[in-house]
Length: 435
Image 1: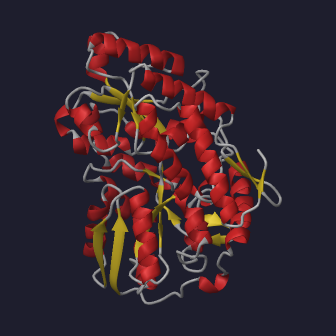
Image 2: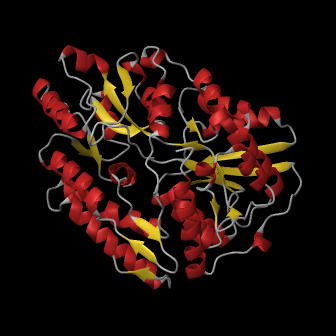
Image 3: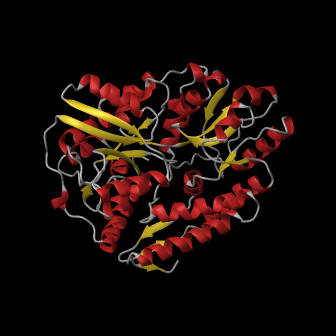
């Protein structure tokens, strides 16, 4: 991923179209340098946010950060949008990469080109910068990447002589073996309330949902590779080879009760797993995510950046806090030292810091960052996030439970989400070419 410039070019063209369609914001919106003292409010849902805020406060006596936990998903982005409109926005907020273009184009966040743009340019490789440098401006500072991995119960696999799959064909065989070994257990999960994994699996398969031409967007959520991945996972769910569950509960309950013994996730899941199910210490391991042809291929499931929402009362101190939590080695240690976060830094120079700070006892001494590094380097190039991902994700989430209930096919869900996305883009005045 660190050498993939094609994605950067695609995103630059994409945001140029996005800003044209939405009106955009200009360089005059950049916050001033501001004083680096005073109080800062911080909204985040990522694991370890409370720890990193506390660590910052201990080392920065002139700045007082007040952390507020917020819900994840579209509920959070609606909350943040409403706070900006009401003039009650926090000084620092997390925004995942898929949502960043929409927040930038609609003027909900500050242009950070003057304050943190030099930091982004200096610390992050081009393929990471392109996630936050959009339309010639810097809108956020990257925190982490989120390469796909396979989480699995190594004790269950060893006891039942089940091999760790390296291809999707082998994954299906594994899922059948798991169900045969324990009729109540499953070797995977199709989340019914979170489109992020489906998106990542389509990306990994070679799908490209959005592309930006010279003067118009092309939208193809149901392209060939995406339909292939969707049909595969839809069949697994329909045949009861994987659970269909919400991503919080009952998913974690199924893990705790030995009903989920393998699942596809991202590098951040290592920390979430050991924090949520500590009594299964020594039973889990990480492996590369299976691929269609056996050759390395990956994608990002999540990944976060930090922004200064429009209307911040203390942008100078907010910028200092963002800089510390994304690029300072002590900030990196604070994220992972509690064991609740296994974030994979977007700044490659900080991977050794997080690797050293993240304990390996839960995974029997396994270097989980080695698995994450290999997956990070295998991320497919060319993916572009769409201009109305809130609408796209909502359309997907609204239909995913129907797949679990057997009343809709997953490829049909992609087609419906594509139509919804196109309608929303046209409503906002964006130019769209026929797929």
